[in-house]
Picture 1 (cartoon, helix red, strand yellow):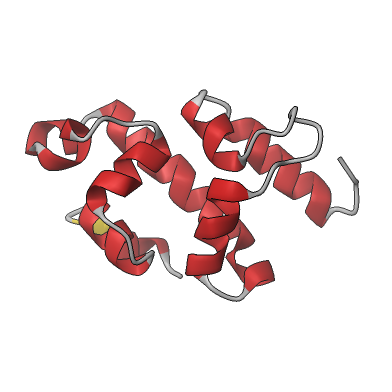
Picture 2 (cartoon, one colour):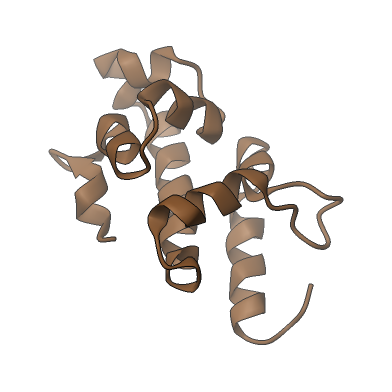
Length: 116
C-alpha cells in the first residue's frame, strides 16, 4: 500500500491507518507504543514523537506486506510473530521499545538471505 494512503495533510493519520488495518485508532496507538491521547488530540497527533512512531510502524508493515500478500496479515505478523535473535520479542515490542531500526535491519538481512 502507498504511504500516501496512510496520510492526511502531510501527516500520518491514525484513523486512515486503522481503516486500512481494520482496527481502531486506539489500537494503532497501543501497537505503536503511544497513549490514546496521541491519536485523539490534534496537537498530539502532530507531535514529532507520534509521527515518528506511526511512520516506523507503517514502514515496517509496508516492507513486509509483499511477502504476506496483504497489509492486514503483515499487521498481524508485526504484532504477534517473535523475531529470531531478539529474545522472542515481536516487531511491535521492539518498536515500542524504540528499536524500529533494528526491525528494519532484521527485515533487510532476511531479504538479503542472511538468517537471524
